[in-house]
Length: 534
Image (cartoon, rainbow, N blue to C red):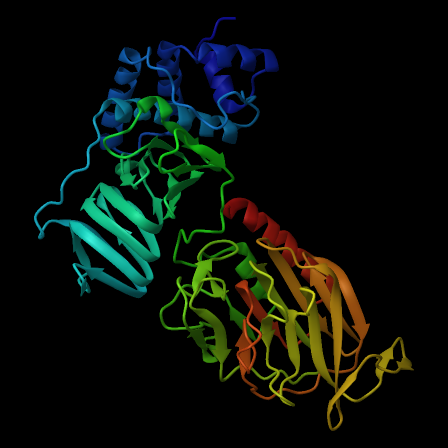
């Protein structure tokens, strides 16, 4: 079958037959055909964002012709042949093919560790410092400009801008050498980078590998004699080995949703599962549809758990609080369910929860709480949120001793009314004069390392617990007792003993009971948001 511009256009529009798609996949394997397709794809997808990128691509395509005899790098999915089906998939492949040509240039150009330049030469600038403690040569470094040299981030988070608009996010503890505005040596810790087209070629070297980026988003974790590279978008090349012992034949090309681990002394990289929740890849809470959906329901307070150095931020700000910290290794922030941050409690972090001393009043007799939770380790009786403190407070969401979610409210000692028939409150535990507590517990153990959307409602008749949009338990109850500005706790309780072991994000409080339709709509919106943000 002859492949002409008309067929290429149909491929780019997602309109070929299966026979045409199969023939095209064979045709494009030839270097000259790859060049032709790449140029055509550029016209369709407007891939050339700048004159600089035009120059890079032209040289890459020329290098592709002279380097056609070079064996392609191993990839984790090299034996899989995708079938062209959608324009989005085609655009991704077009971008990948052109970027692959850029990789050949990088492969042919020698990469060497450049010695640090004079101390006054700036390699990066600090965009944002979140409780960060940065040192250079043993001295605290507070200047917003980073000259070449060896740095240690002892606490907090840093957002750095390198050459070409490359945005780098570093999580303490970490040690790195800002070699130049295009190259970083990461000795230990976690680093994430977002590389625009102007930053193509940005390189991160570790003790076990060299990572060359070609306009993408990726993260690196260096710890315990091993380096992991996780790619979330685009394409990177990983050259295993130390700078003087690299074997080009073992290079790995990683595409979106792929990851490898390189262990010092091991002959080859090992493919692993990409982890979207381990790394902080953005400090900002984006304007997401889920947040808009929550606000349309008129919460009395909404805690998006943004990464902030000033504490636990609320919408409205009146009900903001403080992040509690203690001994630990990592910051009290972690990647959120969508983007930005979440409150991290326990594990190896300094996070010990959050406290709001002036929360909203919850005195209507009805109540709702919506939240995303991410359990990382079993934490017996770990608290998600509560305002209980002795006989004060009126709600709590926590794990029981079996790691099953349990919702509890404090109610007036008045019989519940269901369908105009008076019914006693069963299972109530006397908590104080005229007050009882009612609890309902989920049916299964909360899974670890998985985000779950949890909703608790109490309407004066029933206490209900929802997980991922589905009602999992309920119990008869009467009106929720009034709670006038009782201290609110996230990830811990008033005694600081029942610590949550994971993350808490997007928590909203309501002085009414959300209905089933509202809860289902919230979860659908969350699913759509998750599909876009991973």
